[in-house]
Length: 473
Image 1 (cartoon, rainbow, N blue to C red):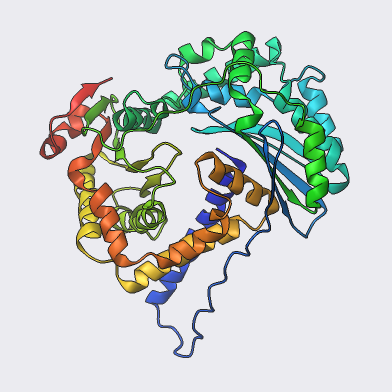
Image 2: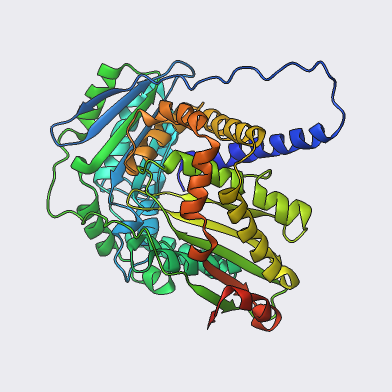
């Protein structure tokens, strides 16, 4: 998960809690002379200066007043999980994590201490569609920090000791994850949604972790990291022309050498629904996951889909959470929504529920799916949801590092730089008819795969109305 995604999740959760508190307050008697909501504020249109270096590297500079700091994010397309081989699931996670753990000139400690001496840090993360390497520093150290970032990007060494340590940590993390029913449910839903497409292979396995070697990492770096499919975003108190000079000095002689990893194929838009019950002996609850293939981020349905998914299951006050948690008491939390990527996306919904209400919970999920398709969202609910989505986006993009990460993340999935400023106005333009149409296209119950992790002895009978479930361990 990217730094922007982490920040966004935390801030959106805070907004959700605030909205929940507001909703509870509305149930009490309020003063009659409360002022109306103030006008919604637009996201200031960022000044984005652009240049492409001779080697194909795109450079975007976003000058911002504020604290004396500069943020860098370098994104590389076709370098993430979608580039992993079928027998190397989750390889990109270790690959990204090890980039800053040693270069041809410094070991991991020297990299960390050098970054700290500049007043910042350096790191990397992987997603379906690419890898993002990020760094920040005090503005007076902008040049040496960019040189350090270039060193990490261009000359990682993948030292033997760091690779062994990363493998050991990954194996321990995998062991802990596989003990959780949600991990198994998500893995099964990815397979049901994407089949043999690379987007289904983002979770590591013991075999894939064990197979990682320094040689394999170096080979992957040569295939994946090319300047002609990379973007450098620079934000902060920086002059664009000076930033372009720094980028040229750090990356101008980065040459395209050798073969490139292949482009990611288009993901499926349809899939035959799967019914799968994964046995978990003695489980007192069922982990439910529902989903199907959906749309890439560049699809015209993308913004209406985000809004529809938020109405349905995108926050504490969403319909499925209010229904299954607040009204029925089936779960501590239920969710639903869209997860887009560059070559295709998916719908996912889910909850952990008590054994005895497993079938009833599925009924409520599908009931909410159908209600969203059959009935226009009431005006006030739609307005509140728009404020929630727009507000969370505006809050999460206040920090300059978040702006850099958002621009880079958008670029990875094929969205233009203008989307940063256009997103909130596009959200505000979505109407109830569009939300209904999204529900009809992507939330039809008959198209959803159903994954259940639980004890078959306790729940199998409740699943019979939803089709024949294949059993798995």
